[in-house]
Length: 90
Image 1: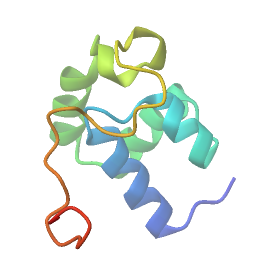
Image 2: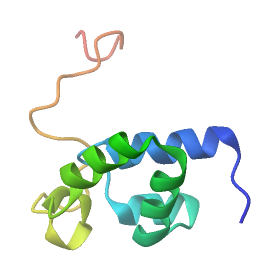
Image 3: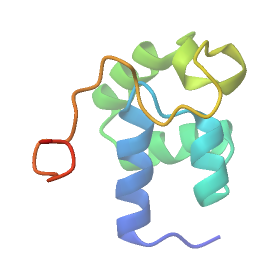
């Protein structure tokens, strides 16, 4: 599978985000957790990769089955409303 530079950048961004699960990356790009780890190792500096691995290992929010949020919810209840949206200003 050949990924564009933009896809690789987006996968790295999603992998760093706490609330984006590996399952979401797999759904969108077809890469399982091990393939994401290999991509991160290949594309990042060694020190950045080690920092990322330390950060995500054992993190419940990176695995859909371990998360505890309401099904169907699209955003965190503590997330601020979008500020430049005319509907949210009512």
